[in-house]
Image 1 (cartoon, rainbow, N blue to C red):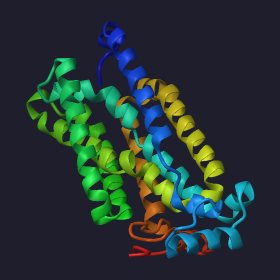
Image 2: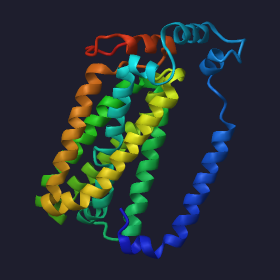
Image 3: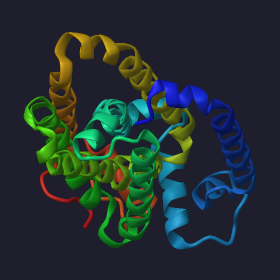
Length: 283
């Protein structure tokens, strides 16, 4: 939400922060242990519980590795791709681009102050997500948050066009509602759910495809948004709202709940040839 001039003046401060973040991430990744299911499948872990044995046996006996195994679990891949769409194609970059305008309508004109308020709000929402994910379940959190995002960004178009500065509370509600939905839902749960619905034997291939799709979606929005904005103005938000609605509908019909379930149970769900499963499977 910081304008280009402000970013240019402070680039010398931003670059060290990015470098430090990358270094910390690399150190944390090197300290991360391998999953118990993967170790069991590679016969590198012997003192494992019954669910680990069951998951390993299922993967060895029923599911080949690599691309061939991925073709046996198209639902895992499609759910991952749709969550990547929820992550990038529902408008988070566009909302951040417009955030200073929304904050200005809400009475905050200083870019640094507005960005600080928004970043603080995003941090609070992320902390809330950490506490909710294991308490209420992934699906139970993901679907309502995508709905909140879709509704918020759809309403941003008329609000941005017709609401005046003395009615700026609506801008605050929609902007902070969208950001909270993103941080609590797709922003936090994207890779958590992808990991849970993807068996280790096909994870390398599946994650490569999903990660490539995520980067491609981000690039597409970055390249297309300025042109769409010039042609459609704030009405471009309707596109993001439509994408969110499609993602919500598909995941509501197909994606099972993963909280509290073993890898083998989830894998069997994803191997099921029935795509539409009404209700919260696995709860």
